[in-house]
Image (cartoon, rainbow, N blue to C red):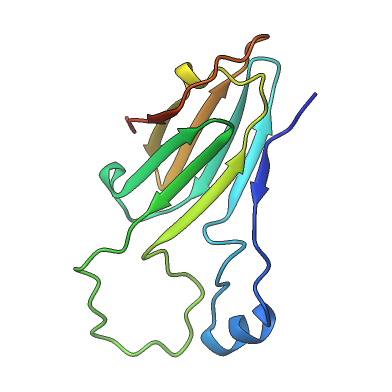
Length: 135
């Protein structure tokens, strides 16, 4: 059985940069869970404080891309002494297995958690690009 894989690129001197700027610049923003049962895979992303329209979810072949673009309204009026989270923008890419029914992928955003449901099938139906509406 195949599993979902988060595609990451290593960042040179990532630990040094993270310590200087007080955030993880690549791999763990936002934190996520990948859960599997007999019927589906579930990807949960912890992204509190946004609206569902702030996110974009797209599938291209066997790649699921979840992104949030920076908002122009994010003006910083306060000085941060320590900053452990900042989700002004991010992009996460996941390789999905062939057993996922791309046509039936759906998502919901509630209580600060973006949930993406990837139902399983026995046969893989290939689709070029599909945008997923967040409910």
